[in-house]
Length: 279
Length: 107
Image 1 (cartoon, each protein chain N blue to C red):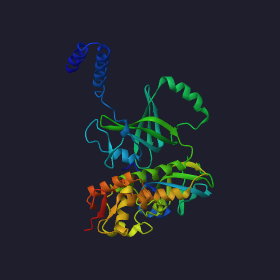
Image 2 (cartoon, helix red, strand yellow):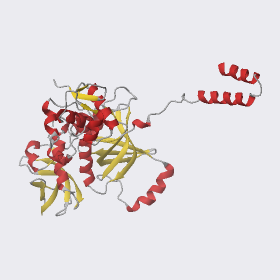
Image 3 (cartoon, one colour):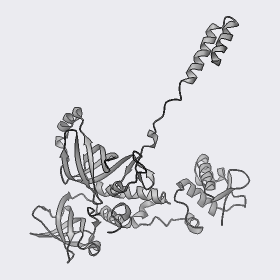
Image 4 (cartoon, one colour):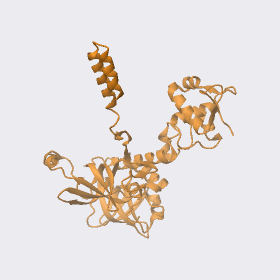
């Protein structure tokens, strides 16, 4: 009611009717936004998984998002061999097997779209029993039975995609359980060599015990530099680190804050100068 | 996990005797009811009537490992000629190294 009194008072001083009205409009428009609940589409991920991971996914409570490796999954994608197709009036149910388990995939029939799809797809390989297919969809639970509601299910043309998918699912699984790879030369990963790094940073990484898996790649780089670079007991300043690592200063500051939060480094002369907390 | 069919290559045969496995290899020899498949080593394969193997093609076999480490085919799928066997070996290695997301811990 305050603004109304203001408006009246302004008009009463004379010849300000238009401006007063404008003021009222502004106040009104400030009140209107902010009430609508935002849907968190930003959290949506598309995660490559194996069928075993789908079957093992945790659901903290009914209607909650499923969790794999402790992180929520929304959209998933996987590759499997079609074991059975059953066409119903409202949906087609495929039973897919990728060697790690079997899961049902339901695709709802869109009566408008199917006729168009059938005509265009006649030349391409079709979804048939024992054929391999890639599925994009969302994990659902219904009557304690899990199925995947498919947005897209399409036949595989290049069988190397099966191998590619399984390796991708492994990489993502390791990313969530052990943190990002600690060096960029991931070619060594084929030999299982996630552990060893090349160059001078390698020694520092394992010198004082392994770093927490949750650290970002930037934080690892900053930590390794702080551990190995020559410095006074004041440590290194964020901008010096940024120059040496060729990283944006903002990223270095964020990485440093993370490391401080983890208790791995501490601030010295100011809040952006750090030294390693060596125990 | 009775439905799981672990992916293996020849060196793993012994570990998986009497189990149903999945092998992706190259057909190197066809002898009527039997065939030889190369997957990290030679594997003798006992065919069934529905399996149509083509020489020099990659084939994926779901089958049961017998006492003599031959594999009795339950199902086979022709994978053509354009298969990267280095990737196949990497998959087998990864699936056994990180079996928690592929096969039950009991296998």
